Image 1: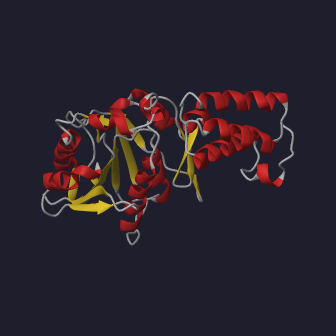
Image 2: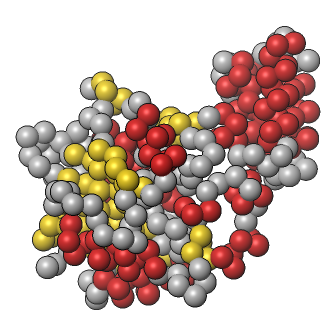
Image 3: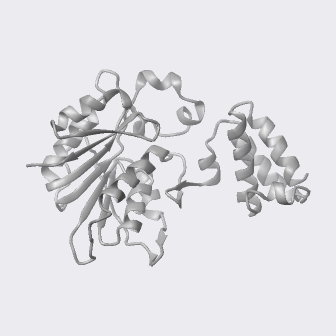
Amino acid sequence: MTLKGFVDKAAKDLSELYPEAEAKSMAVRLISHYLEVPEYAYLSVPDRNISSTEQQKLDIAKDELLKWRPLQYVLGFTEFCGRRFKVREGVLIPRPETEELFEMIIDDLSGKELDEGQEFNILDVGTGSGCLAWSLAAELPGAQLFGCDISDEALKIATKQKVKNAEGLVRRPVFFWADVLGVPPAGLPQFDIIVSNPPYVLESERSQMYSNVLDYEPEMALFVPDEDPLRFYRALYSWVGGLLREGGICYFEINERFGSEVAALFGSDALVLKDINGRDRFVKYIYKA
């Protein structure tokens, strides 16, 4: 089979589950990853033959996708803010909205000088794969990043990430186990920024989600009970009071249905901010003791 032949056939098969454009993109990603060729190779060298060994790898990967297994788990990595991060089952796949959260923080700090000798601490609560903590560490070399999670599996992945910036290897974040619904661990420093993308999808919203999410991604990183949708934000409010410096900033990703309710927990100064699609997606709050 040729490159173009595989892409056309795989895209057709995958379009039974996914929109046509997404199916084509998945097929292209497979040849790029397993054959180590550019994604445009099926156009530039469409008649390039695929060996039997290569074909076997591609077919196994395609069959996994046809079982609704997420592409990121099949490949073993995802892209986040221009960098590659390891992911696997048990670890939430980062969404584009969290990239927006990253950009918001970087924009807010763009005029602030952070020297390596200066103490500037950032805590990512519910760090998952660690992609946000690592990305912030790469862009803010003067800051010390911390990330916590209740999932041992997530913490294993977060600690194994290897991230570089223009200067070389990035200062490692400090990762630790914690349950945000409990009290913060003793011995933590005061933080200048606390950021979190907690579970906020209602149980009743399951019906709107695809099997690639429901069957594979960790439920505890996604869902909250319909009768208590703000449970994690109330807990975060408690953490903020004990861990954030005067004038420090909180950034939270939210369910678009509860922007005003989340903001109300933090007071009249809390801002509800929209994502690129115009949906209420973030709450930002400057802490005043």
